[in-house]
Image (cartoon, rainbow, N blue to C red; front, side, top):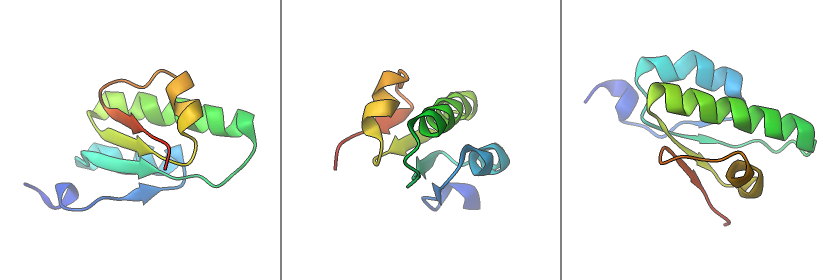
Length: 81
């Protein structure tokens, strides 16, 4: 197990996922407190694409409804908390 697989990072943008998922992170969370629905949808969509690309399990708690609408796959967890 490499060092990138020993922690659970929480990111506030898909830009961070783009930078760090290539390092081998296998579990991450997207946590955005922004309320603009169009912005959120775009960030969630891009984050899901990146998670699929790198085989990362992506947790989305805050905006789980949007995550489900964007069609999460087995690599994504979206739940109401």
